[in-house]
Length: 497
Image 1: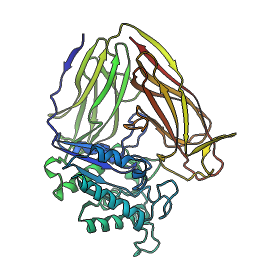
Image 2: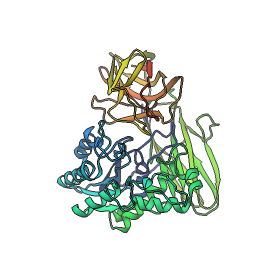
Image 3: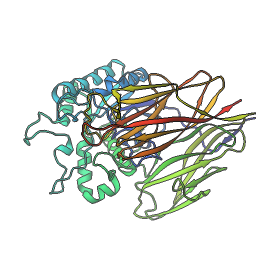
Image 4: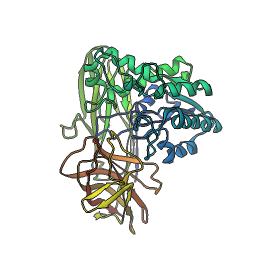
């Protein structure tokens, strides 16, 4: 028998949807595997429940590759009249120094980049949607005078008054031509970073290992800047609550389908931007039957209390642990309290009891290389010349396929061996078109030597179903003698009856 456990009120009906398209600076991330967060994944926190933010942004994508890979088709198929589309591209368009690239990422600003921006506008309008341009956030490229360099503002031109390679100027030009609203996030984030200064931006806003991606606090602050500017321009203003004092990411925790005796952990961020009172203690209380910790291996407790000052609590990450003891439909929440304010972070799960569970270990039945070749030294890029990247190329991957057997399998874990100095992101999907995709883990800093990697999955594979898993490799250094091996793919799970 399933027991319903309800502890939080139902969400209000949604009236409008906001689709966000862009690159890694806007994308969603796997919270427990990286410090990187995209501002698009924080944006929902600055909207009322009547608006739904759907983030399609992907790392490594440009205005061109986002379309060529079919991601734009997914957005259009889900778009309804009256929906809004926020469009941010440039970081990866710059890859070839202002030229079109062979891998569909680099674009020439005044030709290819411009034409794809126009395409997004025209096709959004054709679907009855409302396009809004968002210029790209800055890269943390400080000059000696404490200002962000032109390159950090996406202007690759040599002369100060030359707009030939200025991506921001191109987007503004298209906005004027097409009469499209524009949020100048480049200027907003430039002003914010310069006011904060080089040291504080690296400590609180940007990931220490690069000057492009943001941490949780940076993503939350930049999402707030975008929301404020939208409201100032009268765009979605009745749905925006831009002065949100506490930002939670994700905005709900879903354990999915679990079986009695399973143990699962979910991770979430908490960022205090303007807590009241300005000094106090923030209290987190786990739902009944669950525990919390402030690290994956830290002590697990039903309640965690954290002191804060200046109304701020930055870059805090927490873990929610659950081991169901009985079949139940869980609809609960983590209670977050500061001063007289209480928020609930929704938590859901479908817990099932089974008559029989049999542990199984499975190997993939198919392996496919895309834009990669296998030679005697291992796997390398087609053509042999690796570019220096800071994120994945969606058109380059190793894919394996797991096919379900006669009985339902709850796939719990993937293990593999990676040997070679490549950065990577690994993701899975049920469909052969690899959509919708679930990211499992990543490492944005390449490591030498052999790595034994383990990724939790928790996905049910029905009889005859297919699970596609892709490892997207990239090099952080340009070179022509880079090989890697990815072997010993094993899936562990439970066959249930």
